[in-house]
Length: 113
Length: 117
Image 1 (spheres, rainbow over the protein chains, first blue to last red):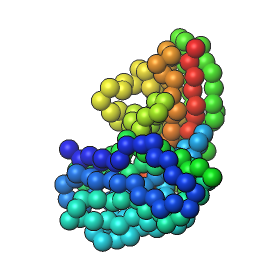
Image 2 (spheres, rainbow over the protein chains, first blue to last red; image 1 turned 180 degrees about the vertical axis):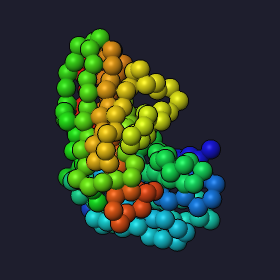
Image 3 (tube, chains in turn cyan, brown; image 1 turned 90 degrees about the vertical axis):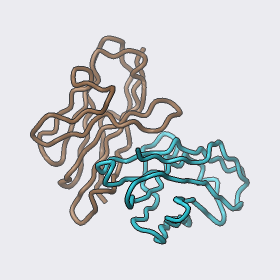
């Protein structure tokens, strides 16, 4: 069945560092791909999404490109801030998953000043 | 995107009791879902709330333990019945298919933090 694998955390970076959180997926057909963010004590927020190959989703300085050849959707940000400290979830929906979201395990990111 | 609210935001309950969580959306949506997030874990889908009919439960979740209602296209409730400490989790509702949006994109409420003593 469909699945999402993302890099395990926690990830700790200094402010203004470059961020990459790896995400790969297994799915039949052409899934839609998402990154959600969960700030401490809050629910999930949709950060960005991409619905077809080579699409780039972007929001709040974060970017991710839908790479069908490598089945990846890595999250990147050029210069992180303390306020980016959160848990990040990679996810997909597909026809074979009946539009249900398949989540990765989540990556906890901590940014130190 | 739709604005989603949940009540209560948190609660501490005694074992053996039940708690009903409400999810309200500011626009009509096609689909509503309920998830559980155990401490430090990812999200697990409990069920899809179907408007005007019984919810569709995922493997491992049953109606007697997690009864769900969805009387209209903007509101749903989840009840956690006969609670035990193992039910301590965050419970989140999500929606998909608001006007002008794709049904493959889900938006989440702020969650209800439940502690069972």
